[in-house]
Image 1: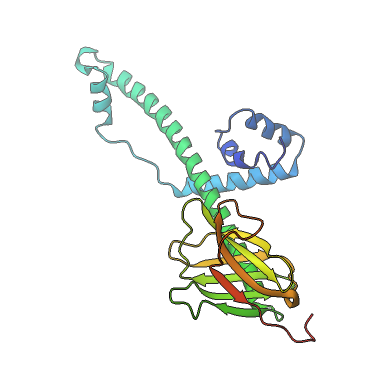
Image 2 (image 1 turned 180 degrees about the vertical axis):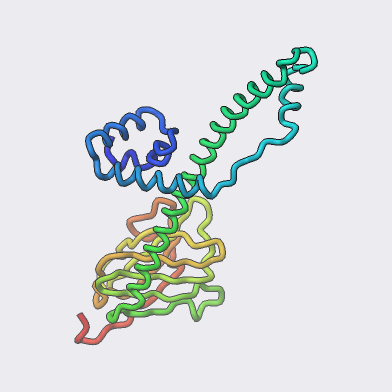
Length: 253
């Protein structure tokens, strides 16, 4: 396995819960000095330490001993003078093993949740940085849509020749099951060019970035249609959004 295939298992390896063959593969990578695996394992261990330190330890109930003995049918008064010591030792051993396993599993779940949250936040931050780069670009062209429709999706499209296209919309309900929104770059001459798939948020807002260079002078409009979940090479329905891109001056590149 390569490092990318092992990406999902570093956190579990760090707390001793990774299974074969992933555990053996990670160990092999570490033994040969794989820098990627060493860095990922260090990150996973630091994350585990943070979560371990922030989670309060559970305290056993004062009546736990009596409940366990009763459920096992043990009556201490029949076991002689050494019964309390035996019972306490047995209970502590059972409790320690169960608590350790439960604690490890819970820590593993927390690690996985934390990893997913970090990834989601990283994706969102990247998307916002890309949007800001387009918004703040000196060569960005702006176009509004939806102002004249009775119940429109409303918003703006920003096109930057080097950064890409940014769509910001409201009143755009989430696409129903099996459907997805697809953006199109409509040239002044030629067929619409697919520009990516996106979904709007539950409250009907959307922020979508299509990265990459755009020939703004050759672009007539940016449109959005509702397509089947996998998208389409050409639009199969009437556009929900059409933002006409204004022509730029002759000196624009």
